Image (cartoon, rainbow, N blue to C red; front, side, top):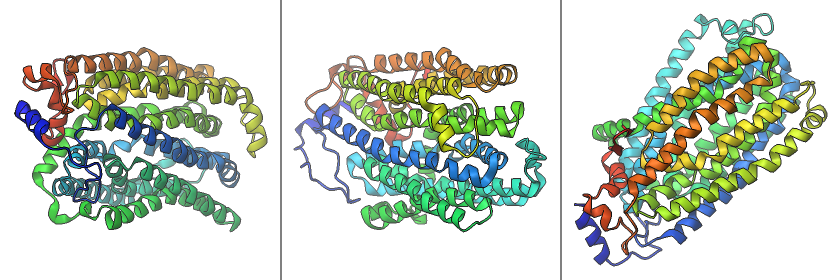
Length: 508
């Protein structure tokens, strides 16, 4: 089957570069090789850097206004609740990443009907999940001792605590189906447009928060205004994409397919597990600090962490376009391109992180003293640990993008399980024994000993799987791949059949 497919492709006339699929988007050119792939990657990196950079700066710039209006105790509670929502990103069941993987071959083939089926199925599943979760949240919120959960008894009233939790969790749940638009845009090579929409959502937050503060509304209104920005951005992007840009992909109840439901859930299973482990392990710090040192210490930790997180988040977003680009390169057997781009992206990530990290560590105390209405105390060593931690997270994300594109996920799972078990216990002890400063250093050391070696191993095993499948004139796997029964074409086929790539010790 794979051999006949390659031969047919070799004799078929190339589609014009401007060919348009039924969704209104340019279809993939089968003769598109490394140079065009590199140009698309560069476009994605540049737009991510510009748009996401602005979007990430907005919450940081609003810290003084929010902190002054809420106070240290309420702000610490807010950050702890947001950490809880960060750990609950697994609520989309991995369907977001699964949908992005499924849509990639639909985009290449111009198969709008199949794509609409996957989009409709994903929206139906996640809308049902969000509706059920919202109903349970509002029914049971009064039964949960939230002040004890976040250790704010005596600092924030039970009613205020419950209201903050309801606002943050409700906004998070509503955004589960709404955020699928980001995955659709990425799959259809609209990375720049997606980044601009998300940046716009962050910018909308600024006038909303300033209006709340200027109007002297209750402190809870600050939380509501901040939560509204991303929701409005995803609603607007959905109306634009499904109403004007790609109406052929508009979700429809009649397009929901039980076979596609099962296929999406199978593909999303491992991504679901990785999302759970990643979200919990990367967002647990505020909860550890809250329980070991109290809510005021959460503010002292969360503010520098939010500023330092810009380093890691930015580099990770810059690397995200590698996901789809690596999938294309691996399917063509172009391992030289994969290796070259990984080296370049790791180098770029380190260079882009080191200079601002050093500046932040050197000038951080002065910046916080001049910028914030309350004192955070000495933060230099805390900032140094956070900078090291986010440098590791961002710099080596390029390795993970190769594995994600190939479906080689078990090495990441093993590394994340080890990291979660070891780091939570070590951070809990270190926070109580040595204070805030120890938490990020413990995280960085543990990450370097667990996740990083597992990621390097998985990257090497991924490339080893595709060795010998060099690119041919038709852009497919070379003779070695065909002699092995088309094994090296399986990642692309898996996206169509919903079966993850597997090999001994890897994948499923």
